[in-house]
Length: 339
Image (cartoon, rainbow, N blue to C red; front, side, top):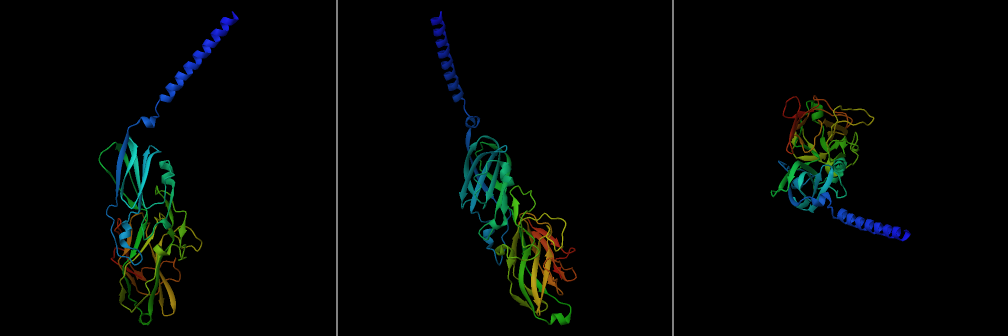
């Protein structure tokens, strides 16, 4: 009886092993859900829309549209389905799975290949310092892309930065004693400049440059030197172009204690031996928009501080929002700005 029981136990064990082996084989043969999906090739190219070039003293205009590198992310829900990158080209082909996908294209951005979710991508910070005369960071996306699709996918991208342009400065002093003094333009610069934004374009700035005055922050895109002397009723007509990240601040501040406030374009000038500032408060800055001052007319001495805006009695100006998606900013509907 013991021998029979032993043989039965051995048989049961062998059966169990065989069954488990067979089950393991079946489990291993079950394909991964992603592997089971149809593979396809997606050709992506980027288009910068109606991006307009401009003459500039400190930026090579053609480079405003330059594509130095392109990164494409294909997301399945929040998860990354595929990633590809290419240098010096505005199109690439990425291998991904079939189905409804979201596709993001990023131009001139740092290496983001470690990102594995859409949430992580949109939360990642972009720095203004990553933009230069060699190229500007751009982003665009398309949702509900059904794959496979034999047609190339074109994604419109826009710059993350805003552009500020001043085209003409006119001296028109109304007081004869001041009109007789030597007037020189020394510097033009941006202050209260946001230095970061997330790729989702939803977060408020956490990095502020040139707080309340020029501090040599990113001088290549926030500062220029006209070095021009103007007789009264004469004009300086040379385009100066600057860049900042979006500034969503609605309530301005002139407090000597730092707090988020409007970005300002500042003209620093000398009248005789005295230094004055003409700060122009810009509206809320949005990505890919160009805030253009056609003419700034100076009628008397400006402010003692670059962060203390002068009144319309001191200068006249108009801010036109144009170009990259141009935004017009006017002084009470006039075509120029008088200070």
